[in-house]
Image 1 (cartoon, rainbow, N blue to C red):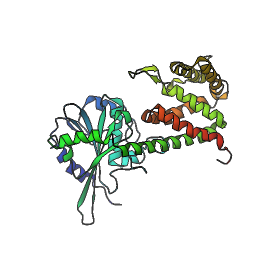
Image 2: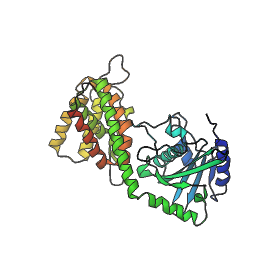
Image 3: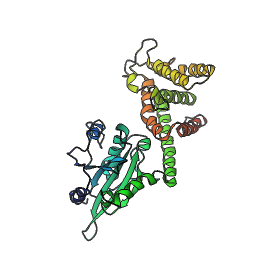
Image 4: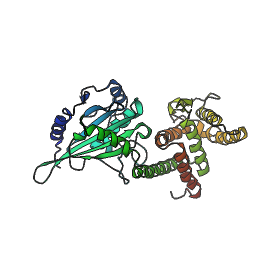
Length: 363
């Protein structure tokens, strides 16, 4: 195995970073912004552990109108700059919706930087962040070949890094002209590129299908629920999980978090009843005709309340309905947050309708 030269990469990059000309430049052990520090501390580390993690370097750039944090990660082995999917997009999650803490995020420079950037734009007032991966390896002559790749992440699509470009060095980040103007122009331009938008749509389709197929199989294998009932459970759980926001972005119906399902046997307070209550508020807020609301609630109540899924046995630590709800919440809500309700619901039901047409036997 070829030894990593990350130390040499760090020395090469550190010298350039300190010459960029920005007021706020922070190494791994320094603070660029307390808001950023708090966000990273409260997020899992690149390996999925508690206590968060910190990028190799953080730089705050600004053109007077926008202020954007830049997160920089180093690697020192051939092929460790970035891990991309079949559409050429940065991998942050596995095909089944979990963050890829085993491979992509901890072992590739761009993916690690993008993970930090994603957490910050999700959890702080920053609307955008830049992820920069820097890698190096020795060629056959022993000369170090450096490679730099940069992506921008926006709060509206926090898990979808968009390519800014590949670079020979870090001059593109300098606080001098014309580099600064070109950087901020590129940040705007790449986010409206038609090819990029098409690639993101393709990945969203593939991700929804993969997650739904896994959920479908898991609910069938573990709970032995017939396909039509599985569709009702997924649809109902999503109503409780997505919530409703008004035009100002404030919650009018808050999301029901899995942690709120406590397995109570008390009337009107069971896990299934809590889900149905949230569905009721969802439907009411969406202003469906009352007869239609009652019809939907009657159907869903039989799936969430009036069956064994709403009760745990002496050997179970939580109700089966909570187990199912938690899977749906953790796997589908991140995709919903990226794609938005219109695209998401159409793709969702296209896949779920196929469940009814495919027999479970032999699957």
